[in-house]
Length: 469
Image (cartoon, rainbow, N blue to C red):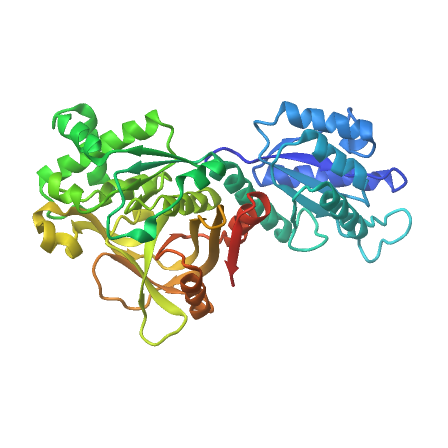
């Protein structure tokens, strides 16, 4: 996720439009991409006129360049400094066949420069390019404004939103989700189809919970990796009155999951967090999972594998930690507010205050002394994006919903990890969740990336996605 986003650039051109528009336009685009930290793969000025694409031969040259750099290119930016050649753009993309997102951009005309020397007609050319891409069956993304200057804040925002779409589109179909143990018997709601996930490129790697526990118990207290993990736990959160023995168990568990994740190339995990873990090992795994999510390796509770997929998508889009939460409580009589909660494995990067404690909900059943390790506190205020992913066994497809809201500073006196969320038209969303049979878990990250995730899921991955507004 720290990798620089690299875009293939197609500069569209039509030779009977003024040359200086294409030449200067290409440079403006390159300057903006460099300033915003993007990598670029583009034809050089010595390869085609102004590094642009117009003829089929030029399209073939650009496509060949893109294919040679296919592993590097995350998306393609089509830019039209003038009307552009619709066939050249479409042929380049067809021949390159990269399967990455495409952003179509057109330069604006200046109202005081509409003579034959300076008029671009990109406004019109963009429609022709999009028409051809539609005919070719090539999906694409549009800028917020139909025409927009590369130096503008609107276009710069479009670029970063598009980069998020590229990360989700590229990353989710390569996801590898580790499933630790079996789902809790009482939670039919976290059922999913492993085969449908695999059809969409998402692999599930299972491991028996007692294999993990057995390996953890074989690690000695004095093992260097265990001592290092204990130090990491202390550095991560205020452990309060947690006994040293419990911290050692958490460290041993963390070392095993870390090693297993690395050996299997996992991008996220989903863990059987109750009640066998507490009864037979003596701690909750919440702190271990919280630490993983905080370093952008999402970890979902209750073996919610598709919840982990949603967390991973948000993490890819935002480059920030994601939490898995319950749609848990109304907030007084405000129809657009609710309480999002877990007991909790929330990453501290999502919290304004956090400390280690016990699991109050199941403590009375398994013994409170066996439930140290929860991360309790308040979810920090600010805008956030929420997302839920599910497999639809009836249709054999993937489905999701995505939206944005705000965590508030409204007073809340409760246990676990929790926050008050304000979401426009919340009652409509809740009705949609219930009517369509979505799960009660939802992923959330402190960033406004809803549009980028919707674009990735719907336009490029072909999922059935509902965008809540």
